[in-house]
Length: 249
Image (cartoon, rainbow, N blue to C red; front, side, top):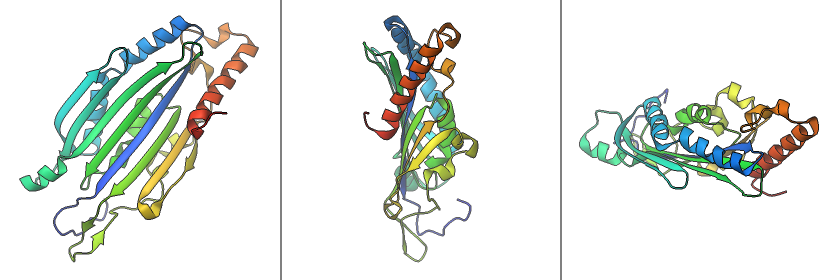
């Protein structure tokens, strides 16, 4: 916060940022689909997820208290970090802030009769005090192949100023997009559905341009006919729009 509020006690607002990132891939055979899942599991194993979350902790200036991570069978991984505000406050304040956390879970999947495979990442950044999870957005978006992104940000509870007045918000916000790099936003179609009176903000993003080689696994687009390339692009776009709109055509 640029202009710090004069508070009675400490800032006990809870700020929660939850978002899903989806990566879509086109695979020409069942073997390719299986290899794609293996590739994703290797690229985004629990060790790498933990390193991403540790970087997030550095960005928001949080102290790491505990790390938990797990790789799953047959696929997927999770990592969770318990954090506290990096401050010299007394132990009582620190105990309150210890309820902050960062968590990430991955869900690689494909359908046995479909050529499309998807990789979903669920990320939760929940903080108490002055730490803002919105500062993590650009790092997390750029840490994954983000074709579709859905985000929710909510501020819960209240704190008090020095005169005892309740404060339900300690920073200005009209949209989650305010905290995303402008160059990143240019690459996406975006929509907002906000309930600012409830301190609840929702944003969805979908990539605008499809460079086919970025969506093919074990195949180069030059190996395909023009008709096949157009068909694949159409399938990819339909899949993205289904996820972006939350509905099936």
